[in-house]
Amino acid sequence: MKITLSTIGKFHTFDLARELNSAGHLRAIFTGYPGFKLKDEKLPSHKVRCFPWVQTPYMAINRWGLSNRSINRGLEYLGKSMLDRHVAANLDGTDVFVGLSGSSLRSGRRMHAMGGKYVCDRGSAHIRVQDRLLREEHDRWGLPFDGIDPRVIDTECAEYEEADCITVPSQFAVKSFLDAGVPFRKLRWLPYGVNLSRFEPTRMPESDRFDILFVGALTLQKGIPYLLQAFKQIEHPRKRLHLVGSADQRVIDAMKQKGLWSDRIAVHGHIPQTELKHIMSASHVMVLPSVQEGFGMVMAQAMACACPVIASTHTGGADLFDDGVEGYVIPARDADALARRLQFMADQPDVRRLMSQRALLRVRRLGGWRDYGLGAQQIYREIWT
Image 1 (tube, helix red, strand yellow):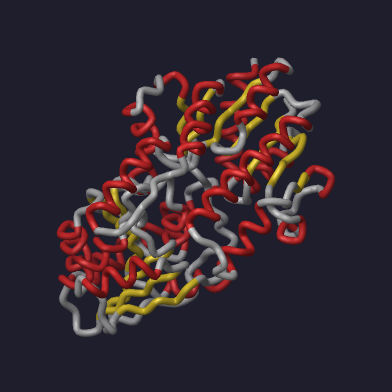
Image 2 (tube, rainbow, N blue to C red):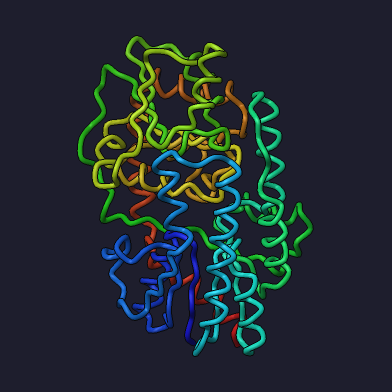
């Protein structure tokens, strides 16, 4: 069984590629990333097919702050569609094609025309559910939102129809597809792994402080307003909230206007994974209160650093740990529930330390990306034979 992968960026697809390559199944992996950014991916160079001509400029102008929403939408759609055309024209010697959603419709159709199988790999909720949740959230907080590009929505929905199966990383994502009318027989739950070699405890949290960590983009999708509301409610003389990730300045400005910002909040920006384990280890709890998320891999990373997690029901947290054992699962958009759990952890350090130990033991029992690769191969064999 020879398998070809396609992804506009890197994401989890390169982790999958390494597992498939080790098992002798990888034919090739196509990506919109430039080759110089892939030197450490530990894959044979002849199997990595780069098509960076649109995605690289798109990434560059975003990094330099030269884009606007109209340019972003146009380049995002162009990058995905051009990669799809390139892959469709170069599929050969492949039994199963696995394409990241949004950029694999032509390739999937080409795979079917060649007599092979097509798997649509979707890392989030059904795209129409995602669009609805984001529209609701922006309306709630009074921030403009153009919605997901209708061309992208139409492409993804056509991919769902064309695919032999759709892989998703969480039960929340599964439910979103069922709610959108996709039949259960077409869905496969395939939770992500975590690279435990990069994450481990490196220090202990300070006993007289209460450090709360968030890792991810500072956006409405990630539930930032509810985290700030909860943080404002909890009482601790040395509480501090650490926000790690790229920031949407519009969201920060809106939160300041609503009185949810304070000098006890520290914005750290992007932190490399080599350093992230240190701040995770030093934190008493990590919170992921997302309104929409396929599966937050940062949860397992934090647990590998002995940092318990509080996550919303829309993150895949319930698939990773047990509520009240290694952390807590709370309803999405519920700042009061989040505040109660945070206050309990601040007031009960012995319970928090026990959760920390359990979180570390739980994540160490996971098979990392190896189990993810084995699960993927089983799914591909089922549809191929």
